[in-house]
Amino acid sequence: MSTEIFSKLEIPHTIAAGPGPGNTDPRVLAAFSNAGVADHMQPDVLRGMTEAKKMLREVWGTKNIHTFGVAGTGWSGLDMMFAAVQPNDKVVAFSNGTFSGIDALTIRMKCATLDELALNSLNPTAASVTVIEVPHGESVSGDVVEAALAKHKPKWAFMAHWETGSGRINDIQGFSDACERHGAMGLADAVSSLGVENFSIDDFPGVVAWASCPQKGICCLPLTYAPVSFTDSYIEVLKKCGTRSFVHHPILEARHWGIVEGNDIEKGTYHRTHSAYAVAAFHESLRITLEQTVAKRAKEYSRHEAVLREAVQAMGCHVTSNMTSLIVLNLPKDLAGREMEMVQNCRSVGFGIWPTLSTPVQVRIGILNLLTPAAISDIINRFAQAIRDMGGEVDQRNIDAVLDRHYSIAVAAE
Image 1 (cartoon, rainbow, N blue to C red):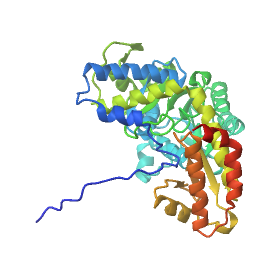
Image 2: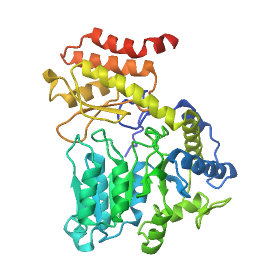
Image 3: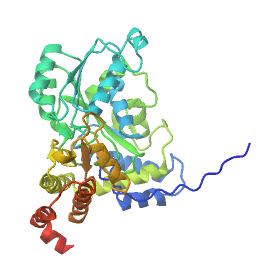
Image 4: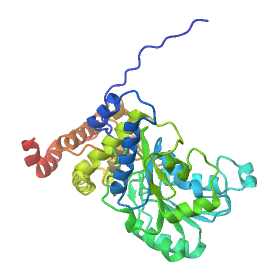
């Protein structure tokens, strides 16, 4: 039998204008590709990991010693965050979109008994877990959290800080306060907020564990490191209850980052094989974040999202999101129901917008690491043309007026 040799894979450049992964900075790509061939215990690799954990503490805004990166995507970080959750643990989880819904499924899997898993291992009904469903397009409010925790008195409570599936920001202050009042240990999915919103996790003491991802606000390659941070109280619970995960064990993983028995040490102990390329890229992405400052980056996201929002509304679209890195919208009435077609048309020409992963389908347009007037203007004009290509009407004068009002001086300066 002959072996088929496929042609060389060539992936063209596209505009990553979706919810993530975002657009990786050229400096990060250069750090990745220029790293030497080195094993995971080479001194410069270890130095990079030591400096990365220290930079992460500053980006997170925390003194948590157990702050480091999990090799993999955001799902790896989230799986580690749920490591201490055990079968029969009482949990209240809040879901208001696709990804918080998957997080809630993870919790149900962690908490399910053997009998409950036997009934449906892929979608178990865990009696100890209460999932509070908030309608798509709405945020989880502090009042909703307060009522649920007051009623159920759980050991753990979970919420997504920013829900990318619906583009909604949830009330992290209300969540933290309610956790403190009712003795729950808060777990927060910060996949979409870290590096985009200006916040410090130490300001939310009711939350004991946080997980994020490398490919959104941190603007690194998707397969590098998912940032996590754990309080001492979380680590103490984990020590007592243990976890069935070796790979995503927070204490064991922390050791390779030089975090042992609550202290930074000069050299970590082996837990997994780290990539010198990934360490170099992650290190550079954190350097860029701190050079720009999270506060300044947050202001830029807010500024440019407002321009994009105003422009798509001028095209007749209805925006339902309130995140600053992402617009979630319904198309104008004459194109209603054709959102998936719109997305497919755009992606076919290298304009990478996304649909929502729930029904009814909406359009998601993201601006991760696209924080320039030129980039936002390009996105707006491409989207306007996509509407025209589907037979919709867009008055270019209205679009130009929005861009001129916000960007005329900035564009001239460029």
